Image (cartoon, rainbow, N blue to C red):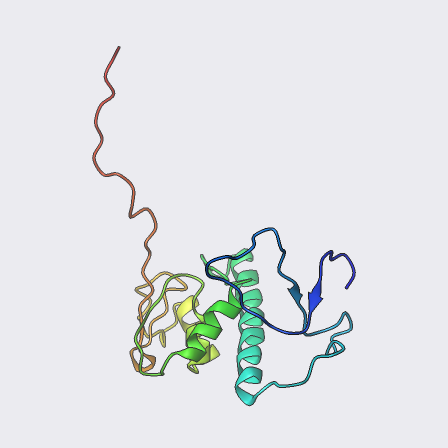
Length: 171
């Protein structure tokens, strides 16, 4: 692999616990080669669920790119993409039951996509159309879906700001 120093492994191993030798670097786990095909020594073991997770991640990235462009063009006032976080969000969603309640924050709308929230539902919310489940009363990306057990995203910005101001004392 070009530009990478260190050992490459095609075997996924987890290390930890007492006695972990911090001076020994973990190998880089590689599945795909530079040309997008399976690397030598890797056996194809993708299940239907694996393919569904990867497909959902790719759809999420495409939707994010489209909506971010709409925001930059002034068509919607606000958008928070989840670039780089697709795996953790969709992977977590795949591990949950469809009945589990989700209390999310910005950049976690991959849970809704995994749970089959329609693209039209995303657009209705971001553009505050008549079909928006929140009836336009929420900022863009404050998705909600009681049917999918997804509670409304909360804007938790500046909740830790100190509300009490003590005047500075003169020396």
